[in-house]
Length: 267
View (cartoon, one colour):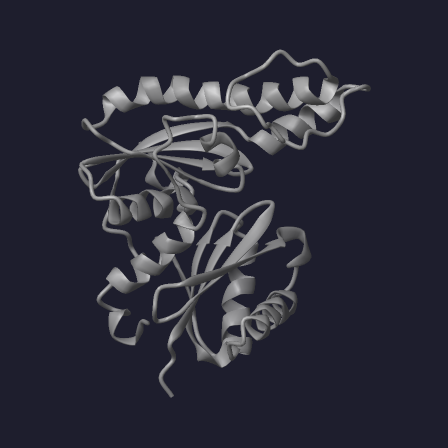
């Protein structure tokens, strides 16, 4: 039997994102809370359920291709792959090295998700340099030049900032990040003050940091955004050139396909 699909896994501290990639390159994505995937069976049954939802036989998966920043999940993913899909979980960049020079002072300290996102940017947007912004639990900025990962910045996340405000104050509601205007406005209600402060405040942070980082990269480096809040910020932040919600999923798929060890069996 020829297996024609990949399961792409972005294992994060808050959520685990799964992507089913077919031979045509299309990716169908799902997101589950990390806390609910506490055992190999919970992981395997969840994967089996999402495969059935997508009308895919779990045994049609040729591999789990994984980026993980949660070490406790790694053995669960390996066990789930073997028991439920009869395949292997391959970790990037551990099992599948990335052709990207890592210039961090301590290379092992860089999260796999940041490296995979940086690699995806180089493959999807040909240019001598790239600036990747991931709006996740934290907001990260990653700089790439001439095939080398230079490093970046780690800043607070939009949701964690909003939760911190709501949890530390008695009268502030939870933000919903709904901003109808394209320009910041003087808030005439608590909800508007909060939403404008967070959304335009993060947009200003992005604009200011890009203004400081882009001169350190080759001219013309595109700014590429990903993550759950990327589109919210991009709408009011013209410095962001591209929003790729599945950037990390695309990077995992490309890493697998680009590796000659796995290419013959890959979709």
